[in-house]
Length: 171
Image 1 (cartoon, rainbow, N blue to C red):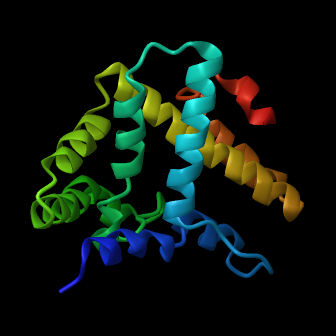
Image 2: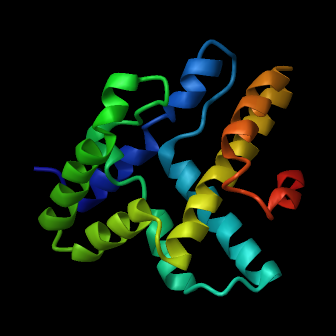
């Protein structure tokens, strides 16, 4: 039986699929889910402080920490995997429920659902941070590999969600 620490450490080894599809053959290490979570939390803290965003910071940080927990079981389901995307919510929810129940942490499931429903100020802010972080990482990888089209693709897909926070693309 896995321990809690084993479970969460699985995210350290889960490379984000969008990067493997686009840059898997390149000669550099790709970001893991755990690294994505870390940078999301750091971005959130910076933007909350600078912009005086009216959200509960503790809730935001917990939501960002928990938002990828379902990928422990489901893996990172890429946008281009149309078949698995149809059931992404249910696939990930099963993993979140399992972890939440196994370690008696109902807050994980509650905050994951709040993130997915995207109705509260904290969830909306976290969704924006999630996309902003992804666009920033796309920018970094695109520059490293002289592939500006990758950055453009990610920016175009996220621009409505990061509206008002574009200045942070120059961090």
